[in-house]
Structures are given as structure tokens and as C-alpha cells.
Length: 123
Image 1: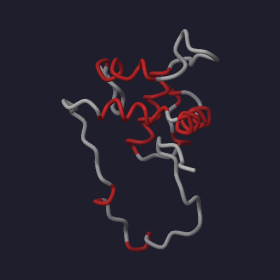
Image 2 (image 1 turned 180 degrees about the horizontal axis):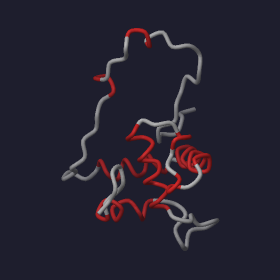
Image 3 (image 1 turned 90 degrees about the vertical axis):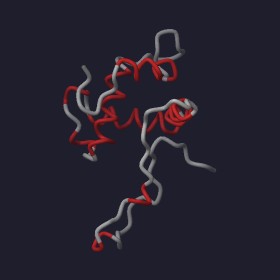
């Protein structure tokens, strides 16, 4: 049984072949892609900071760095494209235009203008 925020065996089977770092791929192979993906899902689904990533997923800095590398390489985009092409998908996507911010948070200061969420930046 999968823990909260983690992929089930069926979900993992659908995306495992799309991820880099498998045996047989060029370069260094990932220690445990499933553990890494579950760690990323934990952060994104819980809304916690990367620094709060539970130790069972590994070092937060390493996980964040790998997440960013995969985002720049378009790995997450390929996974999303594969999952959304399935007409019998049981996933629900939330459009963030429905999420409202507290009125005092509307005038945020500075910070990065673009945040990587799995889609590479366009030139």
C-alpha cells in the first residue's frame, strides 16, 4: 500500500519507462527513481518547503537539484504529456485560477518572476 502522496504500483508502471536514470541509459543511473518521484510529489502535494522534505526521501537539496534538472530537460513535460494523452485518466487537475489569495498577499515583493513546475522555460 502506498503512503500518502506516493504513487501506487499501477501509477509507477505507467511512468517508469519515461524517466531518465534507468539501467541501460547513458550516464549515471538514478539510485531510486521511484523514491525521488515520491519525494517530489510529497513536496508539491503537501505544499511544504523543500527543506521540510522527510528524510526517507533523501537529502532535500539533492532532491530539489534533481527536480530542477529534470524540469529544464523536459522530463516532467514528457510525463505529463503521456498521462494526459490517456483518455481513461482518473486524475484531476486543479486550475489555479480558482485559488484565491488572501488580500494581504496580493502585493508580493520581488522574488523570481518564473517558477519551474515541470515545464522548461521558452526562449
